[in-house]
Image: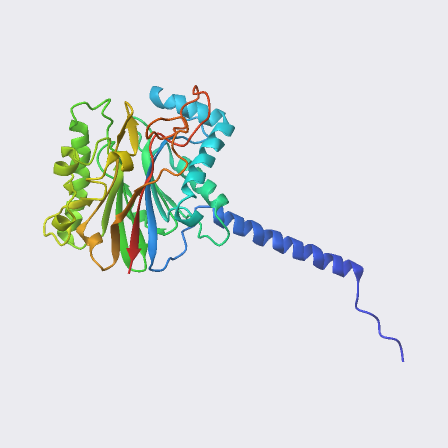
Length: 355
């Protein structure tokens, strides 16, 4: 009887090894792409989430778009100096990942963003630095503003966002609305950046911003008094200013807002001490210019809810080391010398819950 031939073949074994390596490489790069691409965020379960708003100070992308004279300074600089752009992205992402036990805020609204690409660059920088097991950030929601300065709001979230509900309000105004959904529970977010006091000394432009934002909330409230609605932004004025209290109807009294039949908002930073909660500095004076305002629906126990007492101004490592007063450590412009910081504003945070 003839001896049986062995089925072992060095060539076949080498081919199998190459095949295994190739498949592993494909799987690796697919996973890597999921962490840095704009794929929709995976479904999230009811629980507690951290919301953050931050004016990130002139975040421009890596493309020279020949912007107007005011923006050209930042457009040219960051497009032509990739190391400086990467340093800014690193600083912003490092600061954000100090929040929420090293995982970063679950929902991030930002302003002073040149383009969707600039926001996506920050999203990708965050995803690359996330700790193992952390849920990556998904789509960026933003509508670019082509009137005046190119410094629009954007929302980056690891929770599912609704592209169809993402829109701008007003003509050339920096007012972005989007919607975040967990299960069947939706949260409407408006992020806006009101006119500076340097160019709007009377406050009329800030009044118009407040009126536009409030009208969108009022319409939603009239349709559903329990609507979960959050308004945030750099208002360029403090919580006691009439643009905020009268035009936006954002007040300090939780009791007057909770269960109200009228469309009032609770400003979670109203009545706070600017020495402890200040977000910006002018003439060495700390000012609360960055706000989070919530609807009555966020004060109940159904759907989305907010804990106003959790409101914080985040300063961990973000204060200028040499400052003798509460001063954000700004990243600055191309001509600035010395160490670069993060932004000329501190971020603000609050805890939200979905039941």
